[in-house]
Length: 181
Image (cartoon, rainbow, N blue to C red; front, top):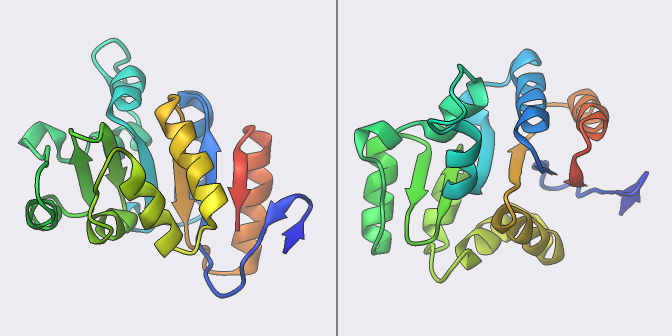
């Protein structure tokens, strides 16, 4: 079902959007925090290359989104290998997952879904995790492609319709792509 070109799904309230640059992703993240959502409720998905480009040594500065994307990485939270190692790593670092073999950084509740999807083969584990969160396969593949091209996906489960409407309007003003709710 669509409303103003935005996909909707009533039974799963995960709302997602793709952002192509740090500034717009930062503003969208700040809008989530300003509306009272905690880091534990906000999903951030990007490649480790994007994380390094947006928040690495060449781009210093305090940033809530950057802190979330970098969460756990200073403590050697890079995880690879078997599903057991991934699940163990999630328990060790909370809700942040860095999968070097996949070149993927995931923070928030969806990190557990990614681990549950097996994080197998390229970024395909991300598509499976997103589908598991109720994102249609076509949209999940668009997010996977966007992440591989240097974008970031933010996601949240709005507490009420007014929040979803607010985020949709805010994210549109930040040129979000593929907004799904």
